[in-house]
Length: 370
Ligand code: SAH
Image 1 (cartoon, helix red, strand yellow):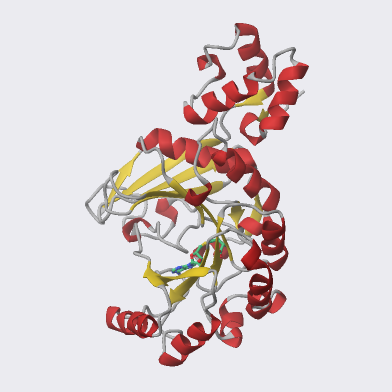
Image 2 (cartoon, rainbow, N blue to C red):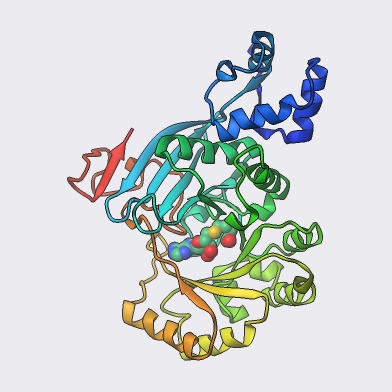
C-alpha cells in the first residue's frame, strides 16, 4: 500500500493544536510551546523540540510533516539585494516568494512578499502570474513556510509581510487569514497587524467579509485604472465586481473598520494622462491613506513601458491635487522579482539570455545561490 501523505503541522491554528495535544494526553499549554518552536525558533525537525518528551516528538513526527516546501532556487539581485525564492510543493508545483530590502541592506525596511495560490485565475493582462493560469490554493502551511524558509535562509527577522505574490488572496480567504493570524500570534512570529498587508484585485465578497469580520490587517486594492471601461480591458474582474461597487462598499463600511487601506496603481503609458489624474482625484476618499504607484514592469504583456519623465509628470499632477501618493520602487528587476513578474517558472525556462547556463554575473547581474 502506498504510504499516506502526512498532514502539515503548520496548517493547524492554535485551537487545533490544543485539541491535538489533549488527544495525545498532553497539556494544552504545550500548543504555545509548539508554535514557539515552529515560528519563533523556526526549527527544521520535531526532534529539535527539546522541551517535549521523546514520545511526544515521535508522535508528532509520525503524524505530521514539519515543512511543506522545498527550496528549488534562490536568486539574489545585484541591483538592490532583492531575493527571489522558488519553492516546490509536495505535489510538484512551483511557487515564488520575494524578500525586498528597501535600502539594499538588512537595516532598512524588510518585506517578504508571499504567494497565496499556485498560479492565478484572475487573468490580468499585465501580470505574468496570470499566464500560467490557476492550479490550486495554497494551504496555510505552504503560506507560512514561505516565511519560515525565507527567514532561515536570509537570516532576516522582524519583516513586513505582503500577500502580493502569486495568486488572489481573497479567492483563498480562509487559508490566507489563518496564515495571517498565525503570523500575528504573540507566541509565533509575533508580527504586528500593521506589518501584514493583504492585497486584492477587488473580490467584493472577500473585501466585505474582511471588513465584517473586523480583520485587523492592512488592505491594498489593485485599482490600476480609474476609468471602468479601461480597467475592464486589463482586469476581467471589473466585469464581475465593478470597482465602483467596491468603492461604494468601502465608503459605506470603511469608516467603521480600523484597517489601513491603500490603492495600487500600475503606471502604464495609457493610464497616466491629466484626465487619469483627475479621475483618481475624484475617486480618492477619506480612509484611503495612499495611492501606491507602481511603474509597469516588463513581462510578456507586450506593452511599452512609460518613460521616467512621463511618470514623474503624472506623480507631480497628483501631488498638486493633494492626492497622497507614494511611488513603489521596482525591486529585483534583474531576477524578475518585481510586481507582476512571478510565474513560478524555473529560471532557465524563462527564456533568459543565459538559459540553462546560470553563470553568476556573466550574462546578467544575477547571483544564483543554491
Ligand atoms: N491578486 C492580488 C495580489 C497580487 S498583488 C492583487 O491583484 O492585488 C500584485 C500587484 O502587482 C498588483 O497590484 C498588480 O496590479 C501588480 N502588477 C501586476 N503585473 C504588474 C506589472 N507588469 N508591473 C507592475 N505591477 C504589476
